[in-house]
Image 1 (cartoon, rainbow, N blue to C red):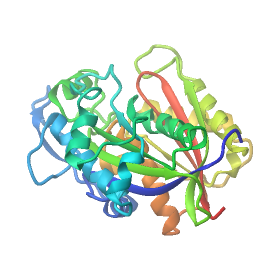
Image 2: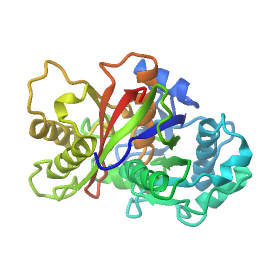
Image 3: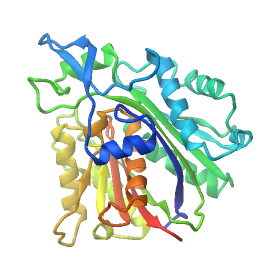
Length: 341
């Protein structure tokens, strides 16, 4: 293992099925979903369905991203005195720059608005991680460096994203990637926010990130090259090597899969290329079936549900493989283990 494990100390979630981590994780455990009609109509004249976050006001655009992030951050930092927040670096995970319909202001305004609404300023090492579904994995790698090399006590990783804008929906609908009555090979768009407070191991029973790995898939979803899952396989192998373990040591998987056959095929191919011992079962969890495809939220939601599952003891075991992918071809994998160290 190339670095010390990182503990997940607190989580926060804001989703269409719950406005707190306990509520959202309970709903995801029960496989509840809450899709509703948007204000938009597809090319077939049907209302586009989405997993929309119900807030107390009809927030839109950057204001809604800010509000959702603030709610998740306040939950994750609820046990910490507010005077200490300014010493914590904030790594804010958002949509990748090339994503169609990306809301303006994510780089220069969002973190300012979040700090203003919270009434604080985070540490100077704070920054934006604009890589969509793989953002949280990249932020965890940055957090590990901040804690182990720069001696930060804690790092706050937050993610906020939405795919429910007309420019985004119209692009994916034109590419036949939305789940509609006429297309079963697609995803249902969503939105939400999540927050993870991470730090050094405390010695208490906790979820620890033991390995992180990355890869690049040349045969990404919009390419015409044959898919062999090279990028995801590389990421998984790197994470396992970082943790000093093998695929058969993992008890189950949690991923960002949200409905498209391409990504399920990729996950199956990567498993066939990394699992070298026969397993009777190897569960695959994908919380996006409850919350929809919500971009950067994916990493926060899969880690939060893993943390809740371990603490409530409804898992297959303490060892988890997490993996995620974005449309541009970036792949990430992480290993987690729950227990006291």
